[in-house]
Amino acid sequence: MRRALVGISESTLKELDALSEIRHVSRSELIRQAVAQYLEKLRPSEQADDAFGLWKDREVDGLDYQARLRAEW
Image 1: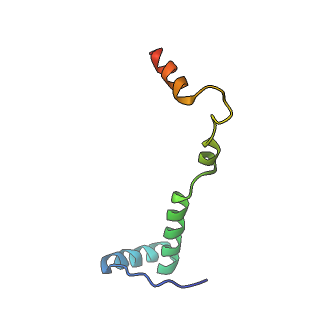
Image 2: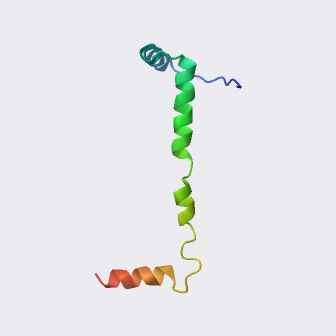
Image 3: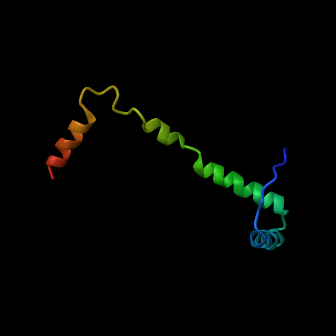
């Protein structure tokens, strides 16, 4: 595991220390978990990738199709 030097405010460190005592894990472990959760949240989902290009093989233009549907309202 590699180390990274990160600047964190004193108030945030106090909160991390309090939480680490409650959860019985080190401050470093809390930060690792937080970074992992953050990266997971930002990672594009596989479902989103599947949606791109859905209309590429269709003969009808997607915008024309949308306009026809909205005209029914």
